[in-house]
Figure (cartoon, rainbow, N blue to C red):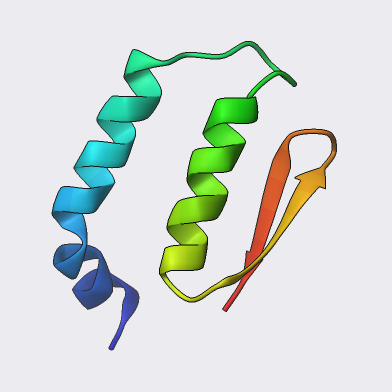
Length: 62
């Protein structure tokens, strides 16, 4: 399955996440809630997640 097909399958989830992020803005390098949300969502997709990169960054491997 290519990226476009996968994106279509999770389109509703992507919109939900985008709306949530816009409703809860955070200042640069203080994005604790955003990082937590991103890591949870990526782990739910089965990705290996590393948090705390550059303070609040998140890196995922498939």
